[in-house]
Structures are given as structure tokens and as C-alpha cells.
Length: 182
Image 1 (spheres, rainbow, N blue to C red):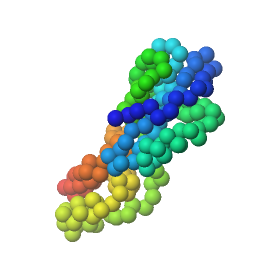
Image 2 (cartoon, rainbow, N blue to C red):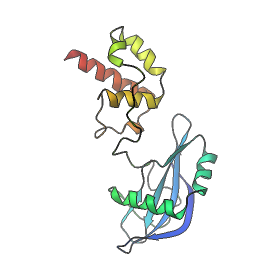
Image 3 (cartoon, rainbow, N blue to C red):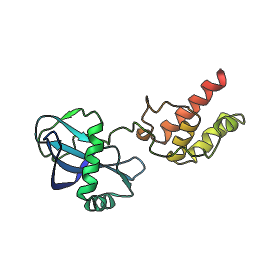
Image 4 (cartoon, helix red, strand yellow):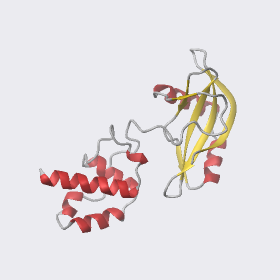
């Protein structure tokens, strides 16, 4: 469950005249790490804005420490990024809980497409069980790289960052099966 990690006293005003108060929010991921994002609550009834994931930390204490180092310049840049995304939740003033349960979905690839650590088609030629076994031995990051590099999932339709290991493996397996049938 998401929680407010830090509330900032700085108020940021846009050129349109809207003022925003900022909170750093976070949630524990299934792998035990914590991801953090920023939410900007306007002084009017316009929607609360949020950033994509700003950081991933090993624990809540480190996420709270990260938030203490955020400068006004960083927060201004984060507000500019958040203004580019389409918001969905209405502001109700300074929140005690985050407006969202997660950071904004990634519209672009956040990790560089690098050479994938294994070729799922080559391994599947030796058997799907072997492919499944080898995929479960990889990190979620490596699984995402495989999905992107072999175009096994459309990032515009599926937020790969929100998926966990079992879901990523299932996507790879179904993508390989579908390609081998054609």
C-alpha cells in the first residue's frame, strides 16, 4: 500500500498561476524494494499530478532518506515532468495518504535496450521447460529487456514496470509460442 514519505513546505507556482504542494510517496514492491514518486496537489480543484517512478530504494528508511535530499530545483523539474502527463485524480488539499497507489505508468522505456542476456527462441528449441527454468533464474530487469528486444510485448499497451517475475515470464513464454506457430 502506498504511503506519504515526506511533505515539502515549498509551494510551486506555474506560469498559469496554479500553486502546488508536493509530497514524496512510496510503496513496497513485491521484491521487497521500495519505489518512490512525487505528487503535486494543486490549490484549486484541478487534478493531482504525479511523476513516474523517481527512485527505487532497498527499504523504506532509504526511501525516506532519498526524499530528504530533494532540492527545490529537482522538485520544479519533477513538476514540469508531471505537467506533461494526463492526471486522473482530483485534489482534496494536502493529503495524508497518496492520491495514487503507484507512480505514473512509463510511456517511454526507462532502461536502455541492451543486449538481452538470453535468446528465448534459441533456448525454447531445447524445450519450453528449460526456457521457463532459465527465465526464472533472471532478474525482472533482464526479463523486461528480453521482452523489449524481441518485441514480445507492446510497451504502449502493457506497463512492463508494473509486472512482476511470473507475469514477465508468462509474457515471454506466450510470445515465443505465438511466434513459433506462425
